[in-house]
Length: 518
Image 1: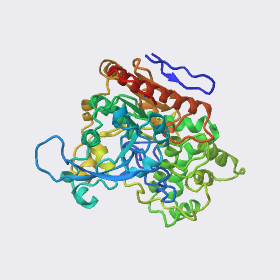
Image 2: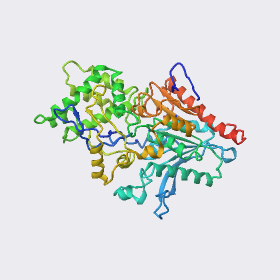
Image 3: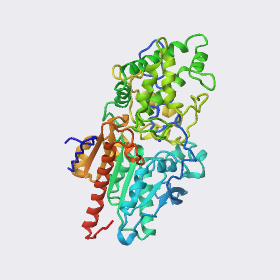
Image 4: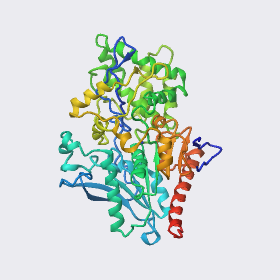
């Protein structure tokens, strides 16, 4: 069955939905080599990254909420008496019509970072809550932000023993327990819960709907790459989509980027080559190795593809609308005779310095979003194979090398990855049959410009498991706040999502013979 495609002029609704990024097993740039199996030390697939801009405190608190803490079990799956930890959550009940009218609870599944940042970038949930008379809850994922076991990050991240409770399954159990306790405390046991999530949070939302169908009536999973595991999709999918996003704007831009990696290596091997690269890219300190600069560029291109929104935004960095188009315009517009590396610097400055306020760049910047736990997750269960193809990709060619990946995980954490665990716990193979037979009320929403869309669900599975694909959409753009610049297709996509959620809630009430008046 074909997916529902939301286009600017027509909306076809077939009722029959995954911050950080350095990718899995990406190799070091190797001189005199067009293909390498050697991974760099930054192999973990990330949805958000250390090169992105930290949250702007002046821009936070756009939405009103109370910050609360819930004493959460460290291990939900044993009866050992371990110390609890405080799970932070943000809550707003201003629009909630209360338990007497069975007011719904909109529950966002927290991602791999501080919860305020996700709350401030998920305007869709806040904006539709009054329409539904809904409570809004944003819980923080364990081991991120202030929801830190053992009293501090230093202790929680100390070793494999203390980190062993950082899993998706434990996080989903946190959410389920928190929902039940909130409902009990508010006498709201009969109130329906709708799950929301983008990126990794979208994966959690869809998995939670499958694992705890009695806890939530439906889930909107936006940009949720639940199939990026165990060779379900080709490992080159992510980088191919990134590359195609640049090529669709400009073939010459694509070719310049593709040729730049060899130019980087060649320059770095010269006498004082690293110093010349430092000067060309306006780095704050002398470059130690070419790979650091390559990672910095790789991150920019990958994030540009993720946040290739049709309007100006400040999600990862302050960026103009259609930022890849602007990058390619800059690369292509330099006068004849400009070097490849000069063109690359001018282009990447759109991402790292669009506002013009940066004097020099740090290629070894610290992670601004508190995502340190993601390396552990990637080394244990979130094993997401990545590679780069020779012909389609504009990145250096490399294969996924599980052996090297496993060695690095052992060196860093003294653990061996379990690449088949996620599909064992949540499924993934033969996903159509699984969801059709055992699932319901899930929206998989994807913008096809988003490189993570290639590993999400892109076809309608049943009347209640629907794929909403937008050809010009990027990473969970539908969850962002509405703006005056929103194109028609985005307005229509959100309208479809609202209609489907409304149907879930109405069906829930009808089954209990309750008339719901909004």
